[in-house]
Length: 386
Picture (tube, rainbow, N blue to C red):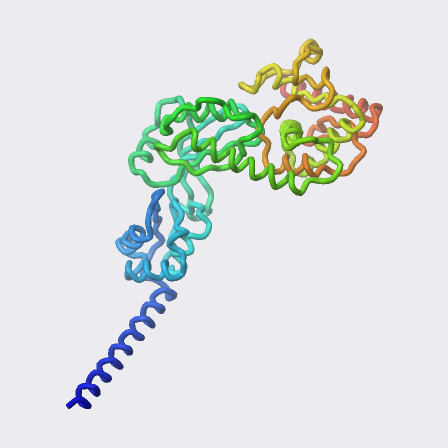
């Protein structure tokens, strides 16, 4: 009798193991084989979304055959914890593995709508835009100031609660401009009790959501800039004329305001480093402008001769060495240039009419280049009738 019971138990165990093996094989095949989706669909993952919720949504859309297998597969391959918020285009026939990669790897939306709050040197504006799946490029639907009435399409975007939102800060924007712009964005909460230190907010893109605190966004910008500055300072070139990281950041902000051409930033930095080492005044217009505006906007005109003579802590035509602090928030490239400048003998530079600059080592060369630039300006005025 016991032999019969043992034999039956063994048979059942073998059958169970075979069934389990079959289930595992089926699940593995389901994970990697093409899925049931006949046409591409846009899947939106809300901020704070979970793989459980996304799995159910994918099954409802017909993108996966079994939500449980998709969730378990994502857990097993350690993808669930990497789920990104955004809108993702799932192509027809995509396997569960491919879909999991789409939702967890880049975090870059590939379909749907996005709101981008752009904070620039001259203005701040909201862009409601939508990705065209065929090209992967954004098409702007609405563009408006943060203090303007909400367009219907933007309000609909907020009501639906899907799609990504971000703040994008341009290089060279001041801390006052950033704080002021965030204060105008009415989906955010909390006040800005004090404008962060100039130079200590990292330009770049930041994910946001309605209800986020302005202070938290500024804190993240400060964290990123601190990390950038610390890393660049730790690997800085030898013999630089900066006693502190703050002085290096001041130089980086000057470089940022003097050129928008990435390739020439190290050369611009070398000019100012050479001047400091030779005891020459920096004589850079952006610092003078900062002394006049205090970083609360743009001057909107050329500097007057009287302003170049006016003594302020930031007038580098009148003071020796660096000004007392940064004049804007520099990006990573400008910080890198300030701490790893090119090795040159240049002491001067002036615009060349193409968006870049021409550099020189002597005053005579510089004056000749200035004359060429003045002629270019004259021709440009004639062409525009100004």
